[in-house]
Each structure stands twice: as C-alpha cells, then as structure tokens.
View 1 (cartoon, one colour):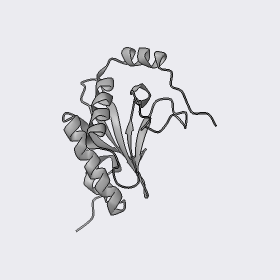
View 2 (cartoon, rainbow, N blue to C red; view 1 turned 30 degrees about the horizontal axis):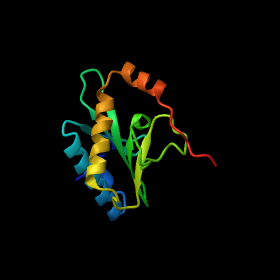
View 3 (tube, rainbow, N blue to C red; view 1 turned 45 degrees about the horizontal axis):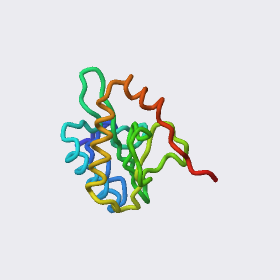
View 4 (tube, rainbow, N blue to C red; view 1 turned 60 degrees about the vertical axis):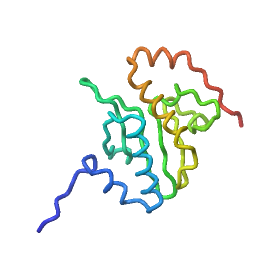
Length: 151
C-alpha cells in the first residue's frame, strides 16, 4: 500500500490541526465550532501559503474571506480579514499596534479566554462586512481612523 500525498490546501481541517500540540489543536477545533455557529453558511479551507484555515462566504464570483484560524506552536489566532473596520471599543483585537492595514485578530495562549458570545459577535460582524460590496468596504475604510497607542 502506498501513501498518497494530499496537497496542503486540500487537507481535512482535523488533519491540518494534528500538526500542533493538543491544546492548540483543541482550541482550533473549538474556534471552528464557533465559526460554524456564527456563520453556518461559511466555506472553510486550509490556506497552505499562510498555514491557516480560511473562512469565506460563498459567492458565485469569488470567496469572500471574513476570518481565519492561524495556529502556531504556543498560541493560536482568530483573525478577521477586514478587522480594521470592526468596532472594537474594548480593544480586544490585536494588529493596530503592528500597524496592520487590514487584519485584526485575537490571540489565545492556548485556550480561549473570551466569552463565546463576544467571539460570535465579532465573527458575525466580520461576515457582514465581507458580504458588503467592495466599494462599500473601501468607503468604510477611507473613513476609518483608528488611534494607535504611542511608544
């Protein structure tokens, strides 16, 4: 019997997460559940170039990515494609301090330390942003001024 190599971007999510320590894998699986609860119509797939799991909205023309799970050895991220446009009054999201122009993300080390309802809210709002026409997101981005903490 020969092993058949599966391209990384076609790996089942569970197999992709097996490469990580059990606490990271388990947190990744829980985040996956939360995404399915928040946006049941989402489409998921491994993005091998980024080594993450991407989540998009089905669209006949293109997949509109709204979130991603980015596992690492010691922590795991739940990121938002248009995160700069998400209201974040409590400043729970990371990325502004790195001056990222589009993404914002949560980091869990390794377990989820936020209430599920908070995560579900961010996921739903991120999917709503992704569903907007590109021109509407650009208009929002043009008007978004996000203060960044100084040194």
